[in-house]
Image 1 (cartoon, rainbow, N blue to C red):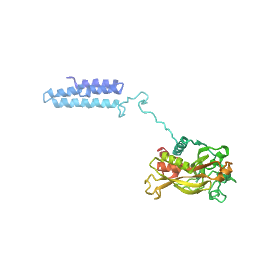
Image 2: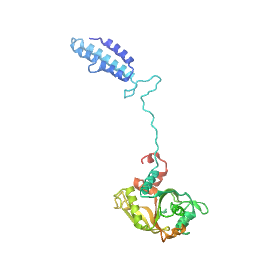
Image 3: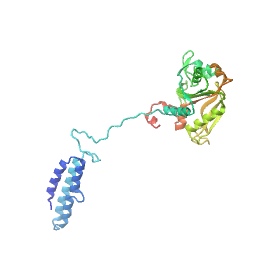
Image 4: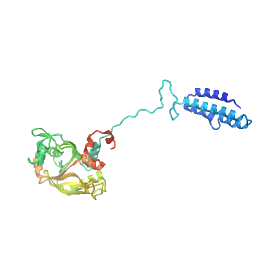
Length: 336
Ligand code: DAH
């Protein structure tokens, strides 16, 4: 039987020479494993005369604890047991630092989604300007002088006759001035109104305008296109309806609602008990608008629509406050 003291000395030497966590592990197995040297000697204690057994057993246990302590010392304290310290104190086995990847803002994502739906139905994409002339923002859109949105209290005027556009509809005029029918476009962009911020209003927001001008365009074409749009943004289980409304630049005009996703149309807090949520304004282009751009309304007609992008995003993603899109809170934004 090997002497316990000799086993401890051999183990101490091998542990200090181990160059990797694998070789350290094989030292452990060699001495302390189930078939290890020390375990074998412990088993032999039973063969000693009964009077010698307690002392020999205690001696072997002391050696076992000492070997385990030497093994623990050589480990780095890292639980994986993988690391042996590298000279210079750098642990090359630690994982590298993560890199922060940004992503598109939810409003940019939903804009791209809406634009691609209309693009797939044959609409081109154009952009207007954020600083606009009163003529394009109101007058050529058949909006009379007395209309409240023309008031300085409701819009941001930069100079007489110049303002931050209050909607994307002026793009209709700009595109029809330059393009002969057929015209089929959508125009996303930023708009501005002097609204006091609350859960559904912000001074700066986004819209997408749509315009289709050709021969024999009907209200049925408008309904079909917008129904397909709603189906693709909100899913096939949502219903739509059109309600008569008034806009100066369309006649007839309507607002389109989608059935509330929260209650399925029964009525709840999200839809104020109505079962429906308004998502856009639309209608057949008013003959007066065609006069401003020299398009003969005896030959051509068309439809137009305009929707708030924040509103669509809020309904689709279940966001209950428009201001969340503008607070730059990474925790909120990274959910999309
Ligand atoms: N410009 C309107 C608004 O901001 C929305 C709108 C309504 C646009 C009807 C249209 C339309 O093109 O036909 O409230």
